[in-house]
Length: 227
Ligand SMILES: [Fe+2]
Figure (tube, rainbow, N blue to C red):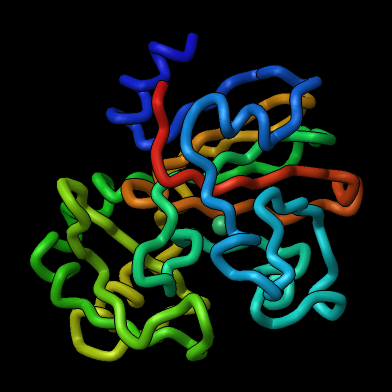
């Protein structure tokens, strides 16, 4: 199962495993498939754990530096995680702890966006981080290179478009039609897991119905995977 996942990850930018080692910890599952980004060690004192527990929250109960603090139980727009970092983590792993059927992780590969917005324009698109703070940088581009890889990024909340290509990308991504071409993935059983290539696909989350506030998901970032 794991070996097939390598091809799928390369081709689609994400992999889904159903009921994958539900009894194992998210950290153990992540460490078995790649190199975990130890956020606690990278950013000591910031209170960001390496394994992050994600649960639906009302907007008023969370700081504005979090998606929940801006969108609450509403839909999370498509974005790259930690897009304001100089080098966003390559992968994120989401593992279901308590599942629900009516909440979906949306996945949109950049390969579906690039026909409408060329790689050259993406490379020229410059964004400022919404807030300067440790762990973030001053300016980032929509496309940059790292070693042999291409880093593609977008975030409507934490990045502020500075030049014309960046504003054009922001306008393009605000169009409602992306929802129709996104893949919608529910995490509904313990162990259901999505591994996302954060450089190659954007992700979001559907709104949380009142009946689904018990959803519990854990997230870990990885710098590389060895499937
Ligand atoms: Fe995210």
